[in-house]
Every structure is written in C-alpha cells, then in structure tokens.
Length: 451
Image 1: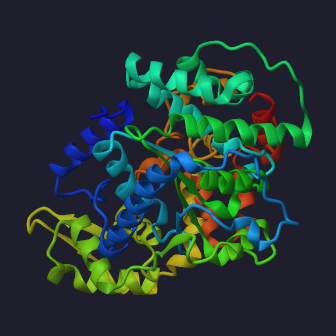
Image 2: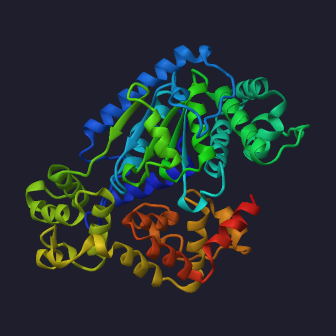
C-alpha cells in the first residue's frame, strides 16, 4: 500500500490533535455529510468504467484524431465512458471526487490519482494545468521504487519513441523515470507544437496506465479549461485506458463556449453524469452537529439559520461557522461543555452578500509582505510549493501569517481565488490587485516565462 505523503502525514497529525479538543470547530478531511447517494453512484461509475477500459485497452485506436469546432457530432461516436460531476460553485464537487475516488484508487487499487485543476487566471496558457499535474504524477511513480520506475520507464520509451525530448520538456520531472533525453530532432512551433504535445501526452498516459497501477485523472473546474486542454481531454478519454473524471459549474458554461459545444455532443450513453445539489436540512444538521460535537437536537436551531443563510452550500456553511466563531457569535461554554450562539444576531447577517468582503477584511489585516506573498500564491494557481514561491519572490520566504491566513479552514493559500464563486468578478480582481498594487496579468506573464 502506498505511503502517505509528508503533507498528508502532517494533516493527519493536525486532525488528531484537534480531535482531542472540544473547544474548536471540527471539519474532518475524511467525512462527507449528506453525500451517501452521490458517493455510491460515483464509486460505482468509476469501477464500471475502469473495468471496461482494461478490457478494451488493446482495441484503442492510436490515431491522433483532434476535435475541432468544425467537427460534426459524429466526432464523438465511440467515446469511452467518463464521469462528469456538476453543480454550482462551492457545493462540494471537488471534495466529493477527492474523498471518494482518491482513496479507492490509491489504497484499494495501488494506482495513481492526479488532479488537473484549471485556473481562471491561466486560461491563456494552454496545458499549464496538465504540466503541473503530470509533474506530480512523476513524483508519485518515482516514490514507488526502482522496480516500478524501471517497468514504467520501459513502457514510456517504447510508447513515446522519438518524442521523449518533447515529453521531458513538457514534464521536467519525467527525468526521474526515464533519465535525461536528447531534444527532438524536429523543431515545431505554434499549433503544430500543441498537436505534438497532445499526441505525446496521450502516449505518455497510455504508457503509465497499467492494469496493476491504474491512473485516474481528475479534471477539476472544466469551465475554465482552455480549448487545447479540452481537446486533450477528449482524446485521453477516447484513446487511453486512464479513467477521466471531470467537474464543472454547469451554470457557468455558456452554450456557445467550447466546453458547451463539447458537452452537447456527448450523449447520455457516453458519460456518467452526477449532479451535486445543495445540502438539505438533514445534511446541514449532520454537518453542524459534527463540527460542534453536539447532538442534532441541540444544534437544530443553529442549523436552521445556517441553511437559511447559506442555501445548503457547503463552502458557505464552513465560512459562516468560522466567521461567527472568530467574531465571538459562536462560543464554547467550558462550564456547561456546550457551544452557545446568538440567534438574533445571526438572523440579521447577510452572509452571501458579505463573503467577498469577509475575505478582503481577512487579507487587509495582514502586513504588506504577507499580502504580497499571498498575491503571488494566488496567481500561481491552486497547487504550488514553497520553493516556487521562493523563486518568484526572488528572496527567502519570511515566516509570516500570509501563507497560513487562508488555511484556517484547511484550504491552500491560493484559495483566495475562490472568491470568484460569489459571482462578483470586479471585487475579485480588485482584491488581487489591491494586495500589492501589481497587475495580476504581469505576474502571470512572468510565471509563463519562467516555466
């Protein structure tokens, strides 16, 4: 069984320590409330698809067919089944996939789970999300030991052939598996370069998707994916044995967008579609009861207000409870060993209208250096390392609250970009730009130049 990463071990320690206390809020990293049906449906769909893909892998057409806007609906005939998880922003789509599919793949199947998270601020950089995710995948493979590395290395070299230089350029961490490779003999640019990327990545994924170590690729926030990445998604589904799971906000997909056109061409027989709805009162009661470690009977009045203010949106629920806790409206009574709250005050709050302002208020309490670091973290995307921030900041990272300020609810610092889910793009852009006075586009261009 694969070992936990250092980050996972640290998170487990934190949760274990929190579990000993009764005066802090508990939002488990392993527990889903009110998602039993969705969890079972998702897992069953993934099992069916993976079994089908393994049986049919030898029959895949390896031709490099590329979908274009001029293609007819017939372009999607024969599409291998995939899973699409839909729902509004903050409803819990990503958490559902991570908490259900990831442990099943890693622990039960000894496979690899890769999350490709698309970023609204990086739509102009084709394949950028894939580059980062496949770099992580190479790290996972390398951690399995020499035997696994040797087997996958031979498979990659055999499958990719003379394009190993292109793959290594796209995924630098691949050197840990196949070693240093000479550059490709043929130089290509522009659209031809994108086509080559598409081709070699499909070959690369097919080479590592072995029956004994299946690969699941989670394409998160597809509504922000660039067209090149969506074409690659289509071809990965059609021509590799990897399991592709996607998520998107269906209320933010325009009919004339590339994703909108593609989704219309995918019939119900091609895909398992799971719609994640807001939590009902029973699920909200469970979530609040678990978070406060009190019986559902005692927290029912609070749960009623929480549902009213958040419409059952899981992201809003956590933010509401954390914010009223920080403001003293939710307090632990050590004498009675119970939580108490001010219902009258809660009834007067406008939660959904104020959450963007809540984030801005949190950030404004940070000093200038910490705000600058947080801005850069948000611009990098949803996944980043301290070393990346060090490079971008051109200096050693100070020990500050900037990186931990947004982690009070267990999210990465870059989750300040999640304020866009409140459908106020003007405030979102103002939030990022106001942190340092630096134009966000300039930062993203610098990231692109430095690879």
